[in-house]
Image: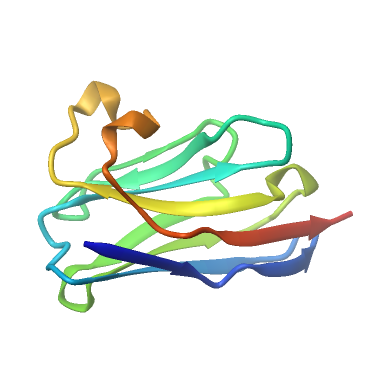
Length: 125
């Protein structure tokens, strides 16, 4: 599976962006899809994840209520809708996927074997 993340950009605080993660090479409908982010000088951190049927999603506490993850298996695409953006959301955002993710390990980067190239999100104050 090849993943391509896009949709990043520069936005003012309080604004919104929608990131997309497109999968190719193999159907991603059986994969758990997640978003992680990495700010300069910081470790990569979990943002959100969504399970196979789209009915179960997970969020980092820092983005709950502001971000929403969704997917369309027919399009092999997942999205991360980001609202009420803050300067601290500035980071490179990566989408990731895995066929098998233990529920307790959903927020761990090590659980995911497929990664996109990342897209830069910059939130100005």
